[in-house]
Length: 193
Image 1 (cartoon, one colour):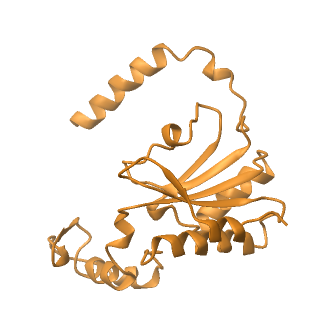
Image 2 (tube, rainbow, N blue to C red):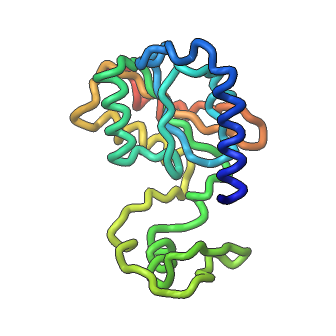
């Protein structure tokens, strides 16, 4: 067993020992909102948004992007579990800003092992085989953080399964200050109709 598995199991033992009444929390989020944000380990939505267990849905992926699967989760969050407001929250210093679709496809074509990065960019350090399949995926990379928030809010609002009554707010979490900074153009695009 790896050290990581042991640490997680021990932490879970401590957590479950004081679980209390949390097993009685209802399935729908108590504060009726959802957050779409990045999987970056520096972001803790519970802390930056003041959440307790049972408060909100938090959907995470690389970049906090409005992928088909993220929109699927948001639609379920609203239709079946009653969320009434959604937040798209990207962040500063995002890894999705450090590569393009072509860079990712090239790295994957030579190896499926972890790559490395330095001042000159990304490099494949693994041995093949790789796969050409990376060329067929839109990795939803980010070249302009604020523009990507606007793009994601617009993509969500334009989806045929998203109710026009749901406001979608756009923010960037600043990794240096811990502050949420609103992107007014995104929030304007996400107004409830």
